[in-house]
Image (cartoon, rainbow, N blue to C red; front, top):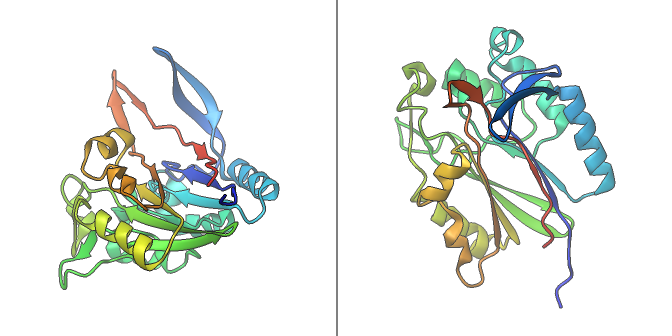
Amino acid sequence: MAKRRHLTILQLNDSHGYFELHPELYWAGDKAIYRNAGGYARIATLFKQTRQANPDAVIALDNGDTIHGTFLAVNSRGEALAPILNALAFNGMTAHWEFAYGPESLQNIVNKLDFPLLASNCYQKSNNELAFPPFHIVERNGLRVGIIGIAATIVDKTMPKHFSTGLYFTLGNNELPHHIQHLRDDEGVDLIVVLSHLGYRRLRRSPLHLSYLRRPQAPMGLGFGCFPAHYRWGLWWRLATFCSSPSV
């Protein structure tokens, strides 16, 4: 019988440059309520407590919409977030509004991070090569975990043109099966995590849904999706972040 191993995955999204604890809108049934949330010092404490309780068994991921949104973030063109994100010790992230400063500025920020920005669907127009790594492998608690990133597919379609200067984005439909097969067959991973900025509903309806991972001998698969801000009933709301602790 295979040894049972525990793995905790921390997932954060849409912090939008909010450094401090701040009011956020939540829904309690059909009633809109506000409560304080976020704040990087508070988040860092939660991350630290989780890592102390699960030594060598925690992976931390960021789905994007992280380095844009507040005055300090925008005024520093996102660079003020780099040391904070490094202190949180993420293992990977993907992107959406990160492209707001332009691809060159984003690359400068990525160069300051201790972890990779993953985007299996973002290509350079000049040579059709990927602008960022498509996946990253992390080893925790005796498990090899492959993390595949899918950036927001709308960056070159509905966002301002300077967001995607020299880049184009696919839906990721063709890339995902290829990377899953490579991670499974060539890298021998035990778990595959798809880190996307698509939103749960879009991920579930699209060909990117993780049905590919249900093939025989496929490793266990998890999908983490988010989307920046959705307009509903005349009010802005955000998908809640969550933690997952599967046992493998």
